[in-house]
Image (cartoon, rainbow, N blue to C red; front, side, top):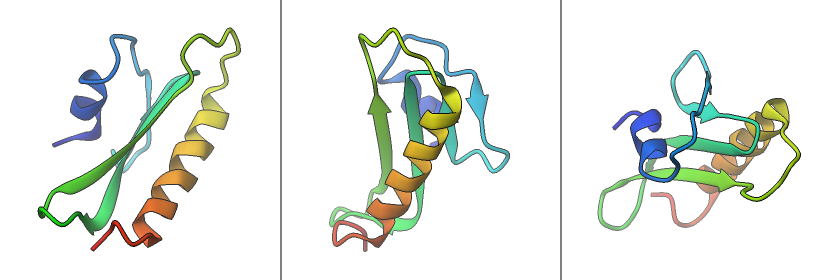
Length: 81
């Protein structure tokens, strides 16, 4: 499933930015990622999400950095097989 489809299940807001490889989608206060070579115990691909709802501050570059680093950390964790 593309990361933008995953994002649609979590937010009604438009996620207007995407990385060239399609693994990350983000806006000023929401970000979504798709792990690489990472599955859970049920053989499901893992996705990540960070939502900063209720904030009046919007920073797409910061959200991109946050979701990228968070997704990479998940990929190195024990939840990833």
